[in-house]
Image (cartoon, rainbow, N blue to C red; front, side):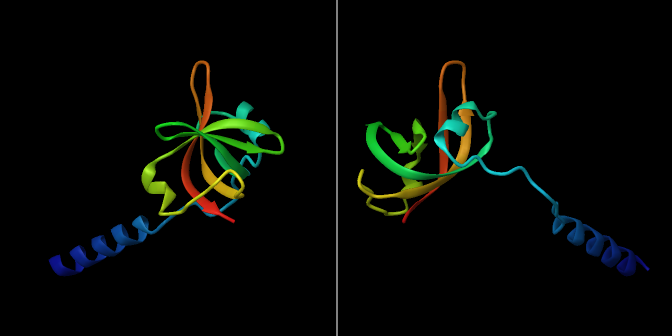
Length: 111
């Protein structure tokens, strides 16, 4: 009896761990102009160019709608060499603070 109860409990726990939301989600912010006015932690997918290093992990990203600072952790480069002439897609979140808005980049892909 105890084995049966234990097995049933384990089965219920494992199925709830695998559960996830399956439905509509908010669309990703897709350009710099939208990102500058988006809510903090909004998901972004931007395509453009990294035009300048601002020191440390900060860079200036530019697309057709404007420029914004992006923070790219060293490990997120994943060995890619990127120049200002290269087009990239970045995925991340808006990081809004009192006076600045930046993009905290989770993934960068050279295209």
